[in-house]
Image (cartoon, one colour):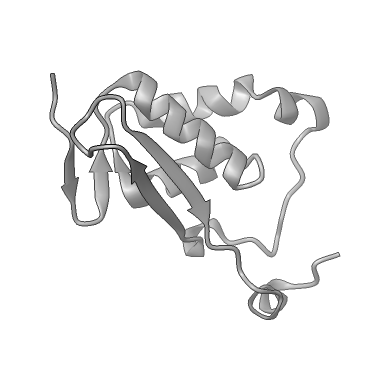
Length: 117
């Protein structure tokens, strides 16, 4: 079994199911973002091999994204997005859970990117 490692504010995930769980949480937390943006968000805080293909798969299987399509959010810059990660349980325990909370920009911060209509 692999050990959980935290290096430079990034968590190394232990298994593929854990990686997919984190990707699904990020996808929903950031308004059903595309696979490309999901990869950017994942790389900021997590490490795992094969996450690019898994991110694309998460987006292609999402019922919400299939239902309504994806609207471009021009004011939303994913490279500048930050989020907090809280580990529930022991960091080395395989049954640990990650709670992901996006740091949503204030109306004043978002207004620099355009209108919020």
